[in-house]
Image 1 (cartoon, one colour):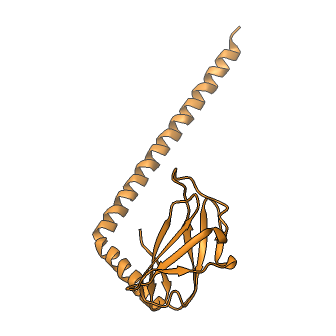
Image 2 (tube, helix red, strand yellow; image 1 turned 180 degrees about the vertical axis):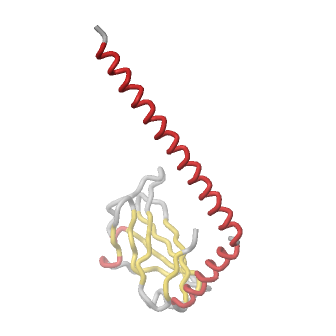
Image 3 (cartoon, rainbow, N blue to C red; image 1 turned 90 degrees about the vertical axis):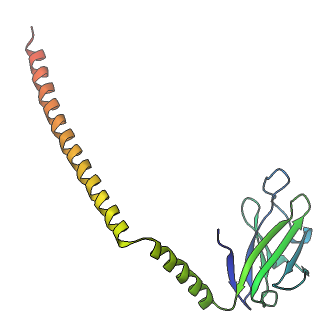
Length: 166
């Protein structure tokens, strides 16, 4: 699972999941009932002041918490914690990147790594196997269709003979 990335110096809504000790979602938590803190790369823990517009509830114990551009002004790992009465403390991690070009470069490197692991021969072999499977299915379909036609003829003949019985 990859870690979420946000751009440095831009505000971002980060996902928070709240569960109780039985792993059931905790819903209906108002912004006034939570404690939030965060730590920037190489920094110390700081308390986050949460405003009503920062805290948005979604379905099944999912919330989003808005972090400001000032809070997301340091490149590197950003860790945040949210706690509320009746819920286990949620800890989240994101990577703050200098710009989206960095993210694009990382994704391209990942894609190139994946592509290099699949050879043209593997693709051709897979395609050939799929073609053979398709030909086999087509032949089976044709045989089944012929058998159905024969059975329909036999049923029609038997139906006629039954009708001719005294």
